[in-house]
Length: 333
Ligand code: DP6
Image 1 (cartoon, protein in one colour):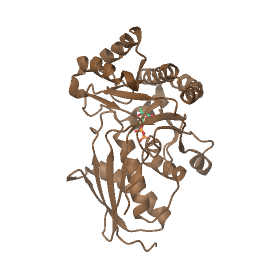
Image 2 (image 1 turned 90 degrees about the horizontal axis):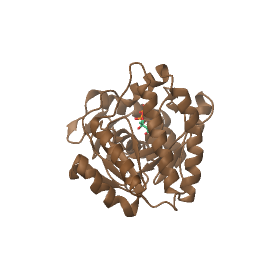
Image 3 (image 1 turned 30 degrees about the horizontal axis):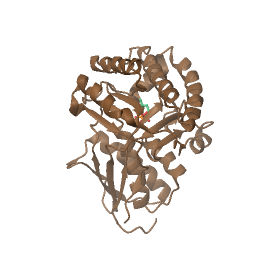
Image 4 (image 1 turned 90 degrees about the vertical axis):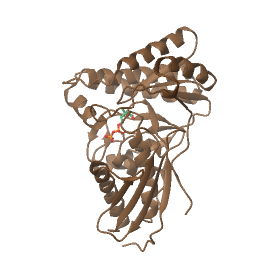
């Protein structure tokens, strides 16, 4: 067992929004994805988590000001088991986490949450992991969390093979996006809990949708084009590929049995408005995750115009403007 003093360690991480989506696992235990994915880490809605290793019988998990719901606490505890295993330390921990993103609204609170937990917990248990290892560990909490370890634009590699080979090769890394100057305008259509979790929905899609494998194949081509466009700073190509990849993912869900449908009437209105903006010469492109909210990628200089247009549909308070944000960071002890 490590002799770690019970020093609280605090980390902050931000959500990320995928431009090439992760939808489906080839290994549910190791969270090995079917496809590689690519995302932008945001500069809004951070999660801050403090982990203190201590001598107690159970992990205690506090979410905001309250004890966390049992399923949430269970996920945290199972994740801490992975950290304890690596640290050869059996002690439990006190975990305090504060989310600023509405839970379950398709704004990826689990990505920021597990990224912050990964950084805080590894430090609290005395592990010194480099970024690739942190992204692999965060992946075990929630797949998309691997990308929130990185700042700016990141690719999460699907990795090759199964078992240890798959685990070691499935990590996230930051991409060079210095030629892109973008904003992501979030239109919150509904902050209600989603009808089915992304985890259950992606499993059902893989098992039952006849459209799933064609999307997997097209996603590899999308990734190739997207990487080149990001490097070249070509927003129209980045946006078009992101939009078609996301709508394609939703098409696979609509083909699932029973169908998984995250679109709400307001989502459709926002998607229509994005097409309208493009007709008016504003390069704006939509993406959606496992929820009804729509995120619109545009040039930083167009973000006020895009936000004003979307506010007419969902209301001013329901529109947020984000930019590429920082990597997950550990506060100095
Ligand atoms: C639609 O990372 O939440 O947001 O690995 O099962 O925890 P688990 O899933 P999660 O799925 C995110 C799905 C998505 C697309 C994406 O972020 O790439």
